[in-house]
Image 1 (cartoon, rainbow, N blue to C red):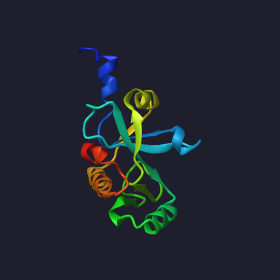
Image 2 (spheres, rainbow, N blue to C red):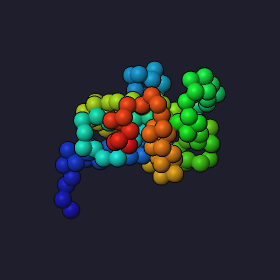
Image 3 (tube, rainbow, N blue to C red):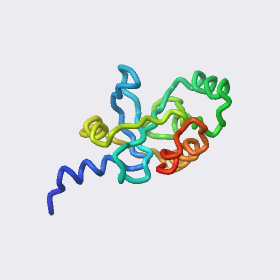
Image 4 (cartoon, one colour):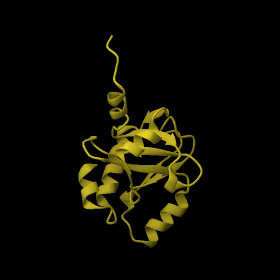
Amino acid sequence: MLPISEDIKKLCLIKQGLTYYCLHPSLGAKPHYLIVMNRNDNGILVFLVNTTTSIEKRTNFCNENKLPNETLVPIPKGNVDFLSQDCCIDCNSVTKESKSDFIDMALGKKNYQLPKKFVDLVSIGIRKSPVVEQRIKKLV
């Protein structure tokens, strides 16, 4: 069997729907599930969304700002194996990370695959969001 180069291993970290439980500096001191939303890894940026259990807070934010319902994707407990409680994904909040910084953050972390049903709902939510940049919408 041929050995897999480190560069190839690193590129495999960036796949739509791959989810990592790790710290991110913009999300505070506790780890979050960060979900890669790029359809491919051709660019220099990785686009991430994260899960939150603050469902009521995110719902109120979306309602107060008249954001489309589709931009908040609920994930009830039991629908995704690696999520142990009800949560949601706010598709209005997409984090941009350089590929190299993301690889440093994700390398060695356990990853999970978000089911396609939810990846598709998040992609739709991002594209319907009036606050997400057009160039990002084209890449998810």
